[in-house]
Length: 168
Image 1 (cartoon, rainbow, N blue to C red):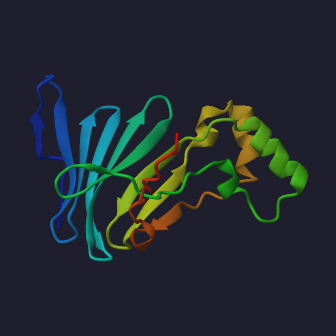
Image 2 (cartoon, one colour):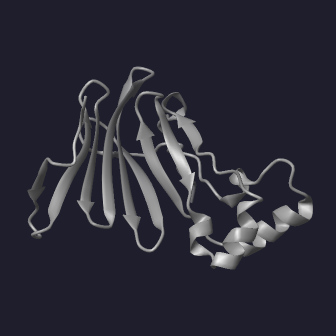
């Protein structure tokens, strides 16, 4: 397992790419691809299947990630990865009015995704409040949990598309 910020190289665009983490045992790599973006790759093996997970994160002004999956031949694979929105971070003891207030205020969800190979999960961090004004952020912060959500690697499975032909 290697953690480094010193290992870097210049890419074709003349910017520096920095190796943030390389874990050969858990088959995980994290690169700072630009000053405002991060790339992660994780090999996920379960259910007699191997998936390559890729997380791309762009920050500016709020970090937001998207995740893609590929097979070992680099063909994109549809995976049933859950969608996340602000409601998943609402505190259980909020009143219905407080929950409605948060949902009305936070119209767009910004999530930051990270592979956690030791726990075999994808962690999901809520960045949506960062998009709000300082005043709104202060009000909303008391109504939301700061905990990351976790999606287990074992829950990631390929979506099998049915090939039903329509009769004309």
